[in-house]
Every structure is written in structure tokens, then in C-alpha cells.
Length: 131
Figure 1: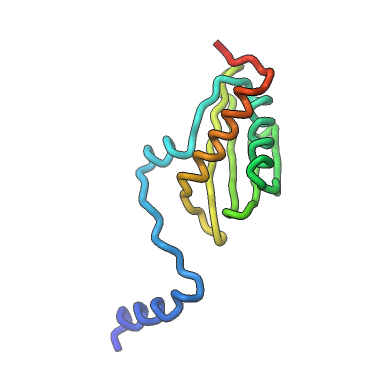
Figure 2: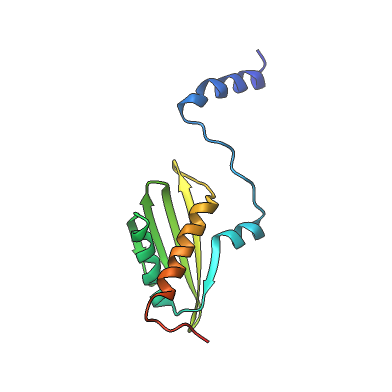
């Protein structure tokens, strides 16, 4: 049997043990647009809203570095990593990465859900939006 045919047969035989569907491919520009949102709020309240959003969605925070702007959390859908960057005194960028089964997976629905929950927490907070 040829090596390629053997590899295909072996992968087909192992697929029932945990294969996942092929991820949709995104250009780097599309991926950045999908994963990143900018908020017209200072860094500290945006970080706090992000922590609250993760709790709202049932995540457990595994690591948190407010000074570095990094959060890592785990929940039923898998792993979430969030990077916050202060863009100015009243503007913060939030980038959400998702993963499952130990691998990075782009989960557009989950990313939108997290970013929308952060936005909702910020808009209902007492923190004034920057002008």
C-alpha cells in the first residue's frame, strides 16, 4: 500500500475517536476584525467589565494579569484568552481568542457573545463613556 493511501486510511479509522470539522479560514485582516473591538472607556473599567462578562457567561478565570491586560478563562465551550490594550486615556481595545480540545479554534458566535456582554456591562455601568 502506498504511504499516502495508508495515511488516509489510518486517519479515517481514527476519526471516530475525536476528529473535529475543518475550521473556516480567515485572512489576518478578517480575523483581526472578528476578534477585536474597541471601546470608548478607560482601561480599568473595561478590564473589570471583561472579568464580569466572563463570570456572566459561566467561565472560570484561570489567570489574570490586569497590568499586562491578559485574561485566560475556561468554560463549557472551551478556553478563552483575552488581551486588552489601552489605546488612550479613554479608549481600550479587546481581543478575544477561543480554543477547544487544546487547539485554537475561531468561534465567531462565542467571540461576539463575549464582546457584546462586555459592551452591555460597560453601557450599564456608571462609568462615563468618553467623548
